[in-house]
Image (cartoon, rainbow, N blue to C red; front, top):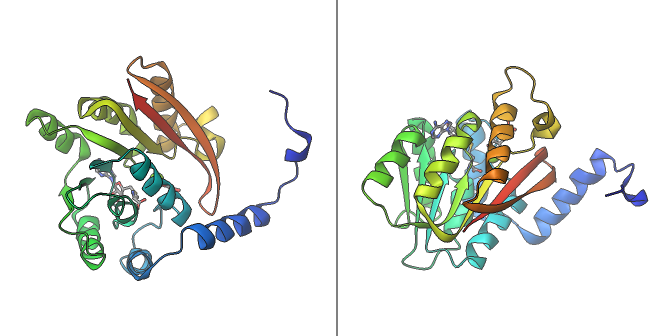
Length: 230
Ligand code: SAH
Ligand code: DHB
Ligand code: MG
């Protein structure tokens, strides 16, 4: 498709201002979310959580799919988990997988503060092992799966996600554009290499129908993959 003539010369400051405008209008942070953001800085963790607007988008995906069971790969401080868990019905569950015990500890506190402890399980360990254990014990299928952990393992996470899904499950995966590095990943850029392999696999996999949404804002330029399990 030809580029639209009005799509040129958008400056970064305008994009960031618009992202702030959208976040304040549609995704204001309450005390629990604001405290979660603060906890990331206080603990010296990387501030790589989804933006408020992206969190609201995940919340809406959970509402739209009527999700009762949500799986997340990559907890960090529980910021995206709080957004998604708030979309669950009273008897709903969110399972979130985190490699680092210190991240999981911060997340548990944040989830407690948000009043969501009863609905959320934070499972510590390499996600590949936790996923294998869940598949082994025939965990009931998840309705929504959010992949946001180490990027090199994204292709393997797709296979495990499909093991833990049903027909109609929505799989979302963060960070699949990496400011364009996905077009030609530089040697050593594991995130871009993983994203490129993941996108190719997702596009070719007959078990899903999928697309990638390019995203730009306060988290820079990246993308979110969305896939429906056939
Ligand atoms: N979803 C979070 C952000 C996750 S950041 C949010 O938006 O709020 C990615 C997280 O994945 C980090 O906490 C990192 O420790 C974790 N991680 C990295 N490798 C992992 C692995 N092999 N298994 C599980 N978690 C992993
Ligand atoms: C980065 C961003 C993310 O959303 C993530 O999950 C991991 C890393 C980053 O910008 O480096
Ligand atoms: Mg991410």
